[in-house]
Amino acid sequence: MRSFVLISVLIAQVLIPTGPQASQIPSIDTGTQTFDYDAALATSQDAIGNQVGIYDFVNSDGKTISLESFKGKPLIISMVYTSCYQICPMTTRHLTKMVEKARDALGSDTFEVAVIGFDTAVDTPQAMQYFGNKQGVSDKGWNLLSSNQADVNALARDMGFLFTPSSNGFDHLIQVTILDAEGKVYRQVYGQVFETPLLVDPLIELVLGRAAPAKSFLSDLTDKVKLFCTTYDPVRDGYFFDFSLFIGMLIGASIILYTGFVAMREYRKH
Image (tube, rainbow, N blue to C red; front, side, top):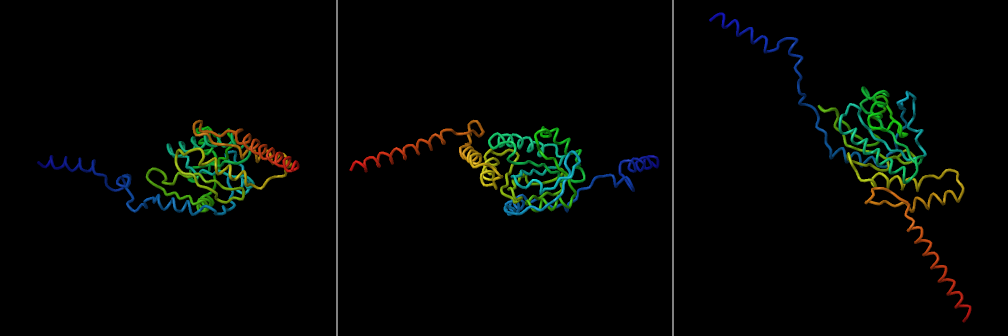
């Protein structure tokens, strides 16, 4: 009987950790704040019109780049964390397709794209480069940027982007922010997959309304006509130059001129 009790005590000591071993058992923090998506959406929308501050980043080549250097063109910003294994990669791959459609419609040099890592302890320039390679954007003229936590938090606050640590990494709104040429928040686009016009139409509006660089009158007029006649085709999910709009305007102008000519001729006869 005594041997049985002794054996039971030894088994219990093996199965029930005590002392330092007990600290190895993961614990659940019941005080973790739940991410409020409604509040995050409201914060994001309230940020529209905000002037984004001037912050420094390091690109994937290790060079320091200021957010101010992007002024003069619209800027698309997507904030990600590179250890995300599903949502951020999926969002980035979809954004790649949308950016290509926007470049086809507007030109490759009419706006900029920046992907910024907000998990600053992990999202180093090397991690951002690896992330860019995996999502196929490293060679597409995208800016893959890292920074310190203070600047990332400040930029996120300016753009209305909330993120909270969670058991899965981070909880955050899936958000792409479009800044105008002056660095103000112009539009927010939400979702892993979104329709093409949600991103491209605001860019068209910004390109049409941007401060024009030194151009000849004819060159500027050509750009205006091209952008005015650029139309979205939902069947092809792309933008094309709609010649019918231009032809319609020419026909309309011809009819007006011809009507005026006939009226003037009849007036002279009588």
